[in-house]
Image (cartoon, rainbow, N blue to C red):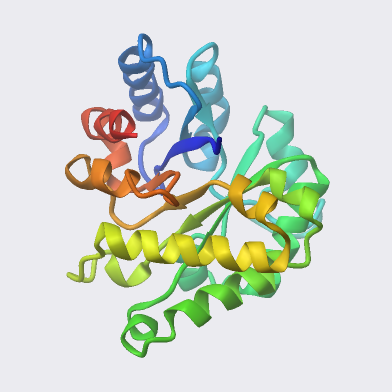
Length: 252
């Protein structure tokens, strides 16, 4: 059975005290929840990772990083390495988020290097990808998604996929006024699983958790999570509110 995951990407939000308070409220809200086969993840900003890890200790909340540089060390001002993250207890790193691709020019090639660095350091990645509005309108969305996966991940050996979680982001449906349906989410998730099976095998495809990152809220979470190939969500704005985030968790 694939692991269900609800991951909150806090982006550039919450200072140290706000991060600690949110995790404390989340710990309390989840204390008596069974969460069978379900992971609850939060991704604070870099400067709040250490304090967040301490706050989340002995709870059902995992703390992960939002990004990582591919080099071991060197003259990369402002960047963070795998070893730095491991030293404070980080085990999972989000890579390839649509905002990183758009605002910081991350490419499939650079992300392939980051994925390799994550795996070489025995970390796990939540790998993000997805098509833009123009891709969807030109009916090239399947080709775009397949290309992103092939270029960044399909050089991996089958066994490496045990440390990969996928997060599909329909960028065209985030803040554009366009709406993605649960059926559209399922259609793409099923397609993603099919190309992984084609490249590797059914065992690898069936085992990988694929999260949906298209504006999940408590009101639509249950319908989206009910789809057979949707294994949870990568949550943005709703993850900053305990009531909304726990509502999404309960939906899974």
